Image (cartoon, rainbow, N blue to C red; front, side, top):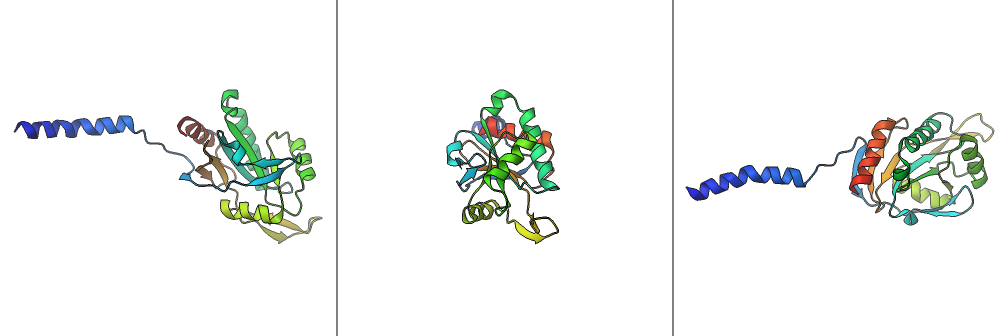
Length: 197
């Protein structure tokens, strides 16, 4: 009888202990559960090499865009700027924001440099060789493809618009697939990663 009473008491106590000790972490974007990521190195708009591996210790916000995009990319880039403006200086010291072009034929470092200066963006925008960019596209599920149009270049680029949040160990934590993500919820996800990983 006494043994049964002890077991019953433990049954009531244990759920309380586990729920206090193991806080459930939830995200508004799609949870990537700490998936491995491809550690790429590409050329930044200022001509220097930019390495994802060198960002270890910071939370990374990874964006995909191109300079001639006039629909989805400006919205995503402006949202990222709003995220940057919402976060505190202390938070920003622990964060690295970076964009990778999906227009490998057009977006040279100088084109990226002019584009970022015109819009007042102060995070790195990257390009590189076709093979280097293709590996990034494949591993991050971007898959851009060219479509003919009546622009001076004769084509535009269609592409998915994922925006990733990587933790300080460069593991994938969250991805937002919509180009016009809600800034407030995205900021909450960034803060959750900052606080827990």
